[in-house]
Image (cartoon, rainbow, N blue to C red; front, side):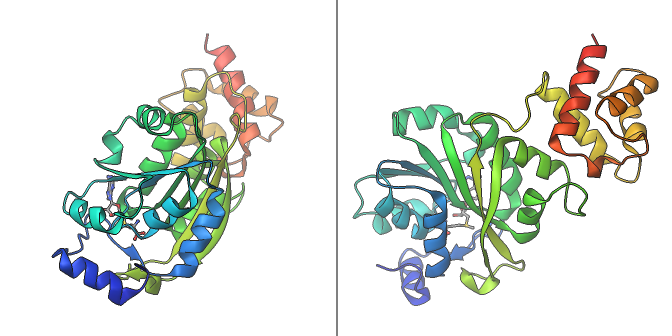
Length: 288
Ligand code: SAM
């Protein structure tokens, strides 16, 4: 069975009377080259577990099953269950869970399904919910060593962006706080059935042993980042002094910016994670 072959995929989908749901972001992968790059980029091997989000017809799931010790896939669409029963029938190390991934306790699932295996998340993500899924995994799952995911190209570019560029924003900081992101490859619309309107990119997020910056208050760090990028045209000083999250006086915020070694007219988009960290720690100390 080769589900990257469009006519084979069509036959299987037809046999189960399946029709694509746009609202569930169903664009199935039909490019073997891209599929292989996801597997290679993910770092899985036969000693590791793979957690897939949104298996669709099981194209990536089959490749993961072949290359991992165990594969577990979480799929929201009940209509795909009998079809996945067929396409994954020859793999005994594979399990499909019919749930909305956003409602799943992923730490519990990983503990129950993978025991002490190292776990990689792999997915061709539904684009309507890419960022919430990635942030859920990064914030909740202590045992995931990498995420290799197909996402919208623009979103991938924001994730890898460095300070100062137009793509650098709160998402770049959030992803780089937890991981080292790396572009694996790009995938044009013709790599999918049906074709999406946008170009896609496979990104690998290698989870860091500990966050990239050691901050005293993680919640405050992200509130400061959100405030800094929420008002991009303002200077950092003005953006933070208008922020609902920050209760200290403007003069103290100015001192925090100077403490980080930065000029007072700097904008948030130029700050590195370390500089956001220094400002956070200064404000955390003063707000007590
Ligand atoms: N992995 C398949 C492939 O590459 O061909 C399908 C990828 S398709 C882009 C996204 C898949 O995610 C669909 O099967 C869709 O039903 C599923 N999905 C959408 N929202 C979901 C959610 N909240 N939880 C779990 N699966 C979801």
